[in-house]
Image (cartoon, rainbow, N blue to C red; front, side):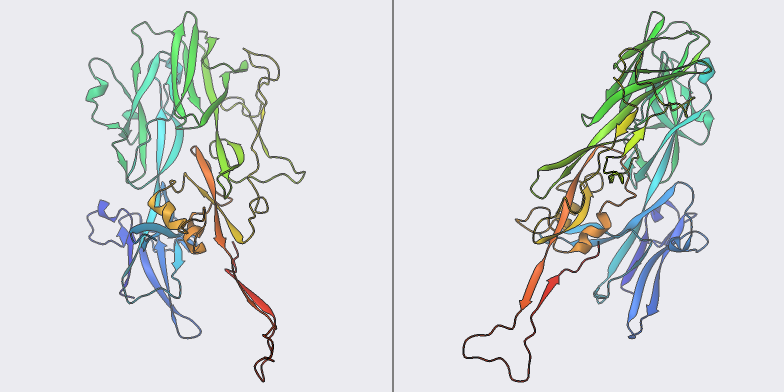
Length: 459
């Protein structure tokens, strides 16, 4: 067991010299059991702060989420690459693991960043409000682009803090470029944090007495800007990537109104002493490829919709019903936008079903499932570790390499991505009762026809 080493990610963030734990978060351990044949069975486990196994109901502190067990492996080209070996917080080592040499297993996690926004000059929108939450891998850069704006007041950046007092209105006396709490893509996420909006006025006029917040239903998909035009406000969504697609706007006003708009940018008359809530509805498309690099399906997805979708019992693609997101959550959005005609907006968004196992069948191969480029970057070291069969596209030599990365029914879309198939080739060995002329077979033995197919998979 001395050759099994466990590491708890982020352990260096505290002063305790122990790689197996992170103070106030959790720890790792190695469990040893004896099998019926007398062999030792080793399991690496993650525990919470009171020692309860995560696999037995133990909970991590708020803002932490287990990602998987990782180990350095040798790739086909001889290089060493760190790969996920299990998504289970209690991972039983394979029986054939060579424990005459050291093995280091690292428990890795995701960390939640909560984004809070408020206005300073929109007098009825000055309360701090959680805009969204985004999960991040260890030491990933802070995501600045969450998408929100106010009337004549922009969010210039976000800053660190623990409560609403961390919001800042920057001006000449407190310039944004001198801010000491700013969070940027140079900030590496190593723990859950709160991020608070820091705002600037985007003109020098008097307070308009008009209150509006505009945001998006797809954090990270783009930025929002606004411009005052006479008595109206013009709002625009700026996509961060061509794989994000603006659909329509919703506009809500307390007590007496809800509308949709189809144009980007759109303009709306904004009355004084009223509050307006605007949202840009945005989607992305996921391209599913076949073994020959052909597009098998292009599927529309919303933020946090399931990557893998199935047909309904009636054989139709599933749909999502758009309702107003802020004040009238039980009301279906208007299919006739204020700046368009009836039918310009379909309240039912079609989420095309992903290809089935039968759709992906290739003679001589077993289809294992899908690898998303949001999970594994194409042509990365991990990608090449999984797809390790030279000259045979999207094939792995070992299903265990792919299994910890395969998309599941719980996989969510939180960014644009593509999905690629993983196959393993069948190895078929035949035994027949045929023999050469003049040879009647081995005396005393019966040549029974049979065939063996490997791998025998349950995926």
